[in-house]
Length: 89
Image 1 (cartoon, rainbow, N blue to C red):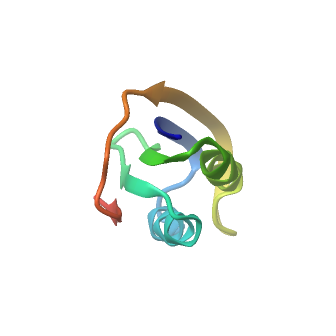
Image 2 (cartoon, rainbow, N blue to C red; image 1 turned 60 degrees about the vertical axis):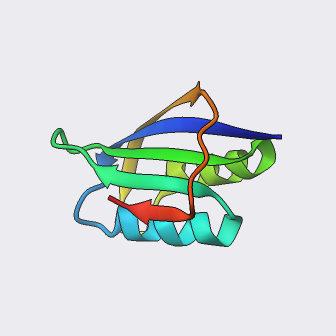
C-alpha cells in the first residue's frame, strides 16, 4: 500500500548536489514526487511509495550525498498524492 510523506532536511544540504542525487535515488527506488530548495537553507521533499520503499528513501535522506552534512530530518505522513515520476523543482 502506497503512502506519501513530506520531509524537511536541514544542515549543509544546498550547493552539494542534494536535489540531483535525491532525484537519482528516487528513480533507483521507484519513489515518485519532488524535491526543492527552500529559502531558509533546508531541502523539502514530497515522496510517494510503499512503506518499505519510503523507509529506504528516508535512510538515504538522513545521509544525503557525499558532500552533504544532514543535521536534521523531519517526516510527516500526508494525504496520499500521486505523481508522474520524480522531479527537481
